Image 1 (cartoon, one colour):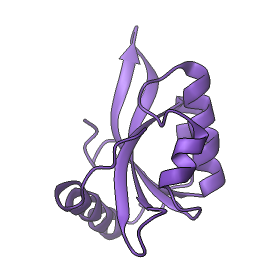
Image 2 (cartoon, helix red, strand yellow; image 1 turned 30 degrees about the vertical axis):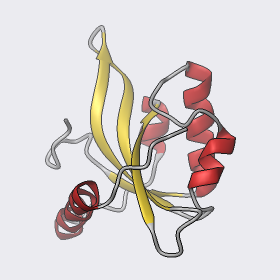
Image 3 (tube, helix red, strand yellow; image 1 turned 120 degrees about the vertical axis):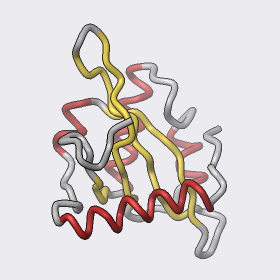
Length: 127
């Protein structure tokens, strides 16, 4: 787990197109923590900005192979409903994402939002 005090902890707002690119990269690498296809992603995630929070690192041979991140998004079939799930992200892509959590107070609030979402919103299963 990546604590909020870790340099690898970050919260980012990404576009739907960036999420599609992350999904395709995960498919190309054969990573299991992703949707089964872009079609399935499109069937669950509304085409708008998504919030992403780093959750854990997957390391192999002392190097980070992937970052497992939480995604908080609006669902396609829910008016104001949201979903939360995980996806693995390539380290280079992860480093390139623009952060929205640089202010300590904002970071605390975003950590709380993700914590509440995990505890109070049903996790959406990827198909």
